[in-house]
Image (cartoon, rainbow over all chains, first blue to last red; front, side, top):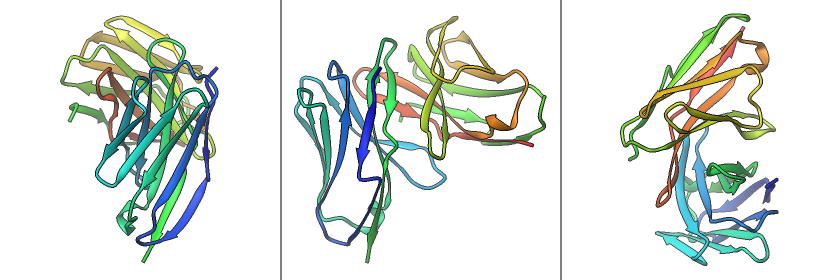
Length: 112
Length: 111
């Protein structure tokens, strides 16, 4: 059974700082890994999808890496802004049926 | 945008009543999912579907049933609502190139 862990659970940083969010998973036989953002009271917004054949994906100030052998993914946020404040979730497939197992998230607060 | 909508957005219902939540997609995706999100538990899979009339259970399926009679609609039914089913319910679709896309959620309160 896939288990996904995210560290830290919460993070507070000053505006402009570069930061790294960590995600680890137990079953390395994954074909992709996805990062999401969730604002309070809202749904999940997909940020980046990394296929197993890729080592990283970039979108604007976001960069996600995937290391299947070590069971780790990182989300790098450059030059953080207050608008980046949200909960960030990573998710990896489990079993058949393209089902996802989610981590419990990292709650990020970027302060002015 | 994958064109996925959930209805209703909010619902309050009484214990013991049946409740049906609807998920509608416009892009003919084969895979659809229902998750619930609760503080301290994160997102957990209730049921999923891999085609019309093809469904399977997730990790928290007790007390829930689903139906998919058309590709575009995936219904989640709480057969007899209980207070433990108070939660936020999310529907999602899967695309191999884009991964998962989630609906905006249904906030259900069982009183």
